[in-house]
Length: 121
Image (cartoon, rainbow, N blue to C red; front, side, top):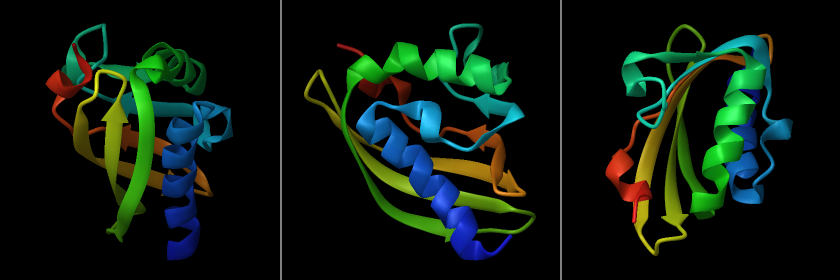
């Protein structure tokens, strides 16, 4: 897949957060997500499968006020990263740098990197 296509997958993710509609994010059916906010054990546990990832995001979307993708970076082995500014309903603003492994136009692996304390009251 070309670099522009990988960047489009990253943009679709951050656009989905901003619109509070994650259904448009191109996760593969067997995708995995590693995130500090995983209620099953934080980033040491994976959220597995598109449906489980969508369920996770549906629970956290109310805390997000706005998201702006600042830039994306192309890496090796299908990896791309996106840096974003995130504003939360509690008035806090934080920055995230999320990594995505993309195959055949779908996100197959995602790792969220941010300070999870920023999302609380």
